[in-house]
Length: 389
Image (cartoon, rainbow, N blue to C red):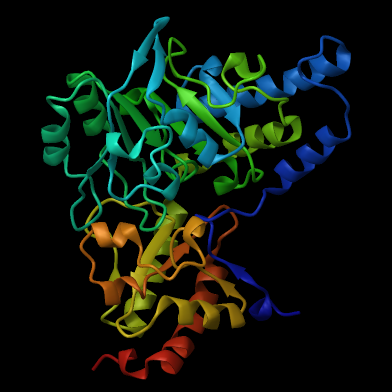
C-alpha cells in the first residue's frame, strides 16, 4: 500500500497514538504479578515502578515527587481538583465559589463538586483569552474561592495568561487550579511559576495510555479533599489498587513530553505550512485565536459555507482524521461553547474544524491534508475556492 493511501491522524488533542516505548513497557509490567501495597518482593517491584513514574510526572510539572497523585484520567483529575473542601496546613478550608473561564473543557464546565449556584463564569475576549480585568472585579471582594483556568484550550489551542491569573489569586487569597491536559508536551509546565495550587494532566494526550491521569499540587500541605476514598493508596489521596502498567507507561510518556516541550520548532514550521496552505485554497479562511499565543500543534479554522459535520465525513472517506472540536462533545450538533464565548457567529462556528498534531506528525501528514482539502472544498462549496489573481 502506498503512503498516499495510508490513514492520516491529525486529532492528537482528542488522544495521541500510544508511543511504542510506552506500549512495550506496559506489556512488560503486565507480565509481572504484584500489588504495590504488598510488602513482598513482587509488591516492592510494583511500588518501585509507580514511584519511578511519579518522579517523571513531577519533573514534567516542576513539582515535588510526593505532590503527584495518579487517577483514572483528566476528568477524574478535574473532579478531584474542583473541590470546595481542602486541607491547608492541616486545617480544613471551605472555598466559597468556583470562578472558571467561559472556555473550559466540559469536565470543568460541570463544576466538579461545586453546586451550580456557587459557580461564576469569567468572560474571555475575542481570541478566547481570559479577561483579567473582569476576573479581578469578580474575585477582589469574594471570600476565599477556587479559580479554574485551563493552560491551553483544547479546541483553539489558545494559551491563557496563567502567571497573571496566579498573581491575582495570591493577591486576593484564592486558590488556583490549572487544567494542563493540553499543555503537556506542547509547552513548558511550571506549577511554581504559574502560582497554581493544583494542576491536572491526562496521559493519553501525549502518547501515554488512555484512562490514566494525575493531580499535581504545589504543596502537599494544601490539597483538595479526596474524591475516591476507601484505601490508603496514593498517600491517602486516591483510594483503589493502582494500575501499575498504565502508571509506568504514563511515566515514560511524561519524560518524552518534557523533552518534546523543550523544542517545538518543528511544529512551528508545520503549523505555518498548514495555515499558508489553508489560505491558499480559501483566502477567507478564519483561523480562531490567531491574534494571540496558541499551542504550536493546534489549528482551529472555518471556511464560510462549509459545515464541519459534512467536511468530517468527507475527510474520513479520504482516510484523514480531524475533529470539529472537543472529543468529549462529539456526536452533538450544538455550536461550540468555546467559540460562542469568543463571540463567533453561529454559522461560522458550525464550520469549525480542528487540526492537532503530535509526536508522530511529520510533513507528509500535512501534505496529505493539503492535498485532500481542495477536493473537499470543491465538492462542498466551490465558490469558496478562489484562485489568486
